[in-house]
Image (cartoon, rainbow, N blue to C red; front, side, top):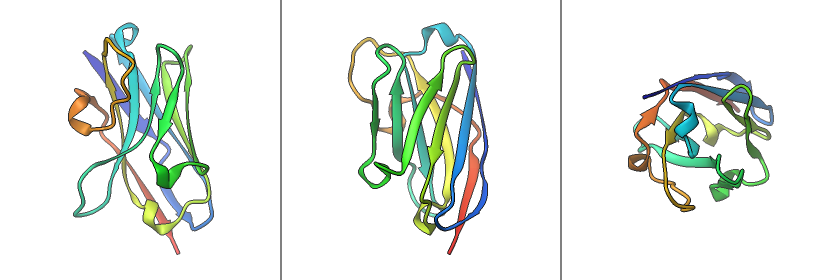
Amino acid sequence: QVQLVESGGGLVQAGGSLRLSCAASGRTNSITDMGWFRQAPGRERKFVALHKWTDNSTYSENSVKGRFTISRDNAKNTLYLQMNSLNPDDTAVYYCAAKFARNNYYYTTPNDYPYWGQGTQVTVSS
């Protein structure tokens, strides 16, 4: 089992920045992929960015490219999402997720991930 705990959400004005953290514990030595997803009120959960622990490659959804950066601290088993130039459309609950994979495919669908954190609220005011 893997436990994930997010932190770092909050209220920020448009154009501001936030850094989200996701601390992983439990069977972390088996994790191969971690990702960030977000869910706005009344909307489905959507992919934001992922980090593959096997080769340190990353992939981001188009609307956040150039604004959001996903990274990982190996020693702390922690995933980060640095979010810059935030706008009101980024308002959502942000979730981190983890999975064990045996290939190099980029998993961008929520159903691909069995382990989830509790989520952290990000609100961007205009």
